[in-house]
Image (tube, rainbow over all chains, first blue to last red; front, side, top):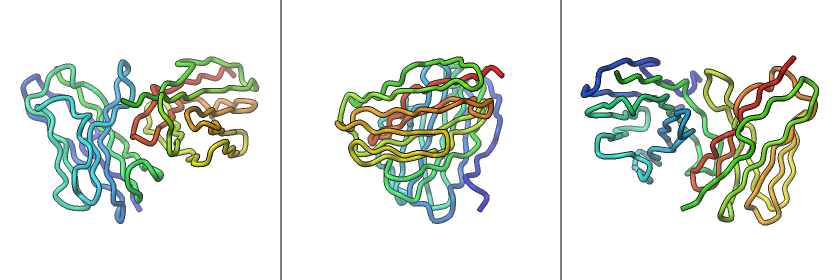
Length: 115
Length: 106
């Protein structure tokens, strides 16, 4: 298996632009997680899906952030409009188990820079 | 809400020295996971602890889960340069600690 796939790996955009991050989880995994990592705030959970349904989105910073999982093999995290403080590394992870009960496999991350 | 605190935030050791990082939760955890992230990389799962007082070993790494299931530790014996990275603990409510960044001087 190729592991969790994220695209793009790097994204540089200007403030106000829309940004879409993509994730393909490991086949057969039932849970998908989006995290944001910064020096100041560490690794933060943004949203968690189980069987394509959002279970916990309490970590989504504000309405500018939205996430979807239209099917078991694809998820997107959208930021509209983007702001410089959104600059971070965004990780997608998937797990066979529900919630935090099993090993999470992280993707390589998308490094987002908002100018 | 639940918080998971890790100490220390940074640790610098000489190669061959031991290293310990501690994870403390404000609430009882059903389980705890440990991950390692190399510089520029992504978190990689190390282990999961579930039982009160559980101790697990992986070569030079020893993981413990407290009796009250509110704290955990990771101990590395005789560190090597390959141990460099940030070690995270994660609690049962999908909360990660801030991590302990380990540097090893050869």
